[in-house]
Length: 471
Ligand code: GDP
Ligand code: GDP
Image (cartoon, rainbow, N blue to C red; front, side):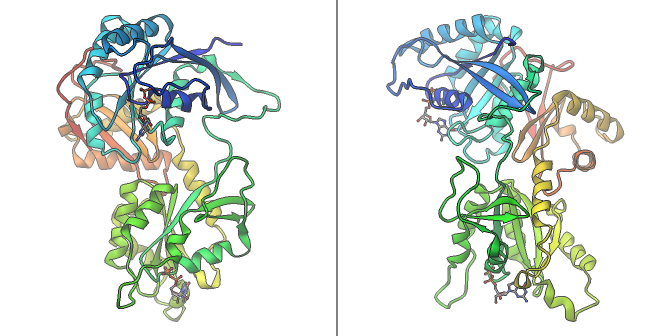
């Protein structure tokens, strides 16, 4: 058995250390300290994480509350534990509060004690329950730590990415499982996860008809996967032998009408459904053509960060119009919704159940590409190579890494974000898609100022001023 990766969680009170500990541990530990100021020893638990049939022993250490109600004493204790025990430190911060003086005190101690020099320290920006506006992440980058990850410990958002980032650094601690794998309960990439789909679109495009066509004989009453709970308002469907979850379908059925009986689009409801989904199906009216409302919903999808399929429904109505081909229609869609040009287009007739045969396959491929994880070294090398091809303002790149997968997000440290000309950004996005695909998914590129970073940087000093950032 290899020695466990010792992960020590530090941070000021109330940032969510215990919640994160429980998440990373995979189950609730018996001991819970809800009372503030309760002094206790460090909490340690052994666990195992899995990645690609490789198992890693992990020792989690929560340092919360170790110093009683005086944070100065607590810092001392936390740092002592980190010095003695850590292979890696998770410095938990609260996205809603920003970087506070207490965070800075703790960071100073980590610096002074030599932990930052000796050990990878990740800034774990917690309580990002939905998307954190990217410009706000810059503040956390200013701490100069090895990685900055955003997540929600309470909702489980970003936890897999964090585990992946940790395991990426300790590949030699893994043991491949060659024989029949035991029952895996806590795998970094769950082997079976039901894709969550939201059907969205303006009124009358055929959303309910589509859902009925999909559910038809395919409806599943209970989930075949133990431990998966299905909301009453969601529907499970079986597409070619695999389950897919259609979220918030009641929202489709419960149509809002104005007094005049005209249906209105509920933006709030649409956003809610999108936030629960991996993939959105944006249904368009193939009879009437595109409308401003379609663009608005497209913008909402891009904003939330779901993957997307554009579905040109009612395509049967175009039979009478042989001059209007799918190619022409696709061109029009691309013209009107240029910002969703990465989205595949399907032509369907929900009312006849046509064009839906490949839907499951398409969703799988989109999710597969969305889940791609590019190792930091590969990505940095790639950015440097691409920046020699096109780089009109001669921006200089340092460490670049993938900071998240939902949606795929990349952070590039650059000498000056203002030197990232829009044509260079466009070049990166195009080349990124050419190399890795990401069909159907938005990708986010973030350029952060990295002054004084020489090669692949590990900045040691705290900087008080936020760095420049281009998003
Ligand atoms: P600790 O003192 O650092 O161990 O923090 P706790 O884990 O006890 O969490 C402090 C408070 O933050 C609790 O009320 C948690 O429910 C809340 N919290 C933890 N994680 C999250 C999160 O991801 N989002 C939100 N909104 N609240 C969180
Ligand atoms: P929703 O408001 O988006 O849920 O739309 P509905 O599913 O209620 O459909 C609106 C109208 O479009 C209904 O009269 C449907 O019968 C019709 N409709 C839906 N899908 C198709 C289709 O593929 N072809 C045609 N010709 N009509 C359709």
